[in-house]
Image (cartoon, rainbow, N blue to C red):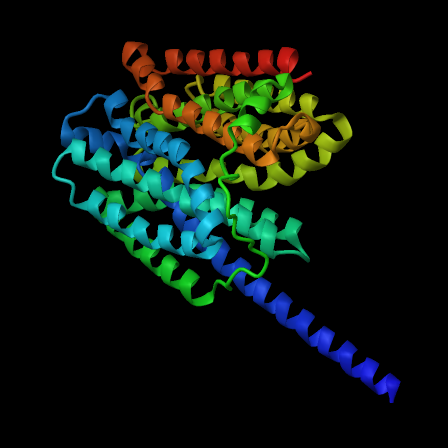
Length: 406
């Protein structure tokens, strides 16, 4: 009799485990699809900046504000969603922000002037962290059995989203117009929000916070006293600034002599972004063997070398340079995230959440600068000053690795 009871309990446990795995698998699929959709909004204007600039009569640096203002909005709003999700739950924030993203995206399509277009892009930037930042938290809380696999798939989906957004924006602009491109983004956002509402399971492991512990000033200040973390906070913007700057003004470079590429061809050039799918897992493996600092330095040096190759007048060499730069960027980025986890001193009052939020903020601030300042360099003398400015930023990153990240 006892054996029968034990067998029944064992069968029940196996059924529950199977149901949990099925639920997590369905959740991961819908999260990855939504991740591709949400990330595609971020850099949708990069391949079509010359087209937008021509319609509104803008200088390259002014057109680049469609990138820099949005990235700045992402940097300033991420902490808010952390606080909100601690109080109302992860799922409502993820679904609500994705559905709400539809509104400013569709408004971009009908913006009558550049100022309103920028306001709508800022609106997108204020909503995107509600999905991006909280999805990571949701994965860590809910995917108990195969969390590492889930994070890996999420990272790959975010990289794919960056590529598809650029490609989709370029193709729609080439064959219809840039406004129709935003219509397609808005529809996809709406469908993604519905899919999340329909298929994303309710949180099982979420614990509502009753205090204001989500924003702990003492933890933030303690993190700023950590020299290694300060190095990471300097390294983040030092690598994201040239990455955003180079790719934001790349269309201006490639649509002029000696390349004379069309918008649709330039959009396909962004396939180099997919190098990150390979770089992220490889860097994680090697940073454990060679050390975080060494792998971060290798990544920054790769970015510098790739940037230099874009100065050549041959398209194939430029393409190779962009692949190398992307590989170096995602190698450094994935490694610095692990480095931050290693460097936090909990006994000194430093919280991992605070350390990561500070890094994300500095990282995206660097991207915001990268969406504007390289445009001024382009206007001052073409592609050479842009590359020189990017190399100068990367040198700052190497200094941070050498002197602060020790």
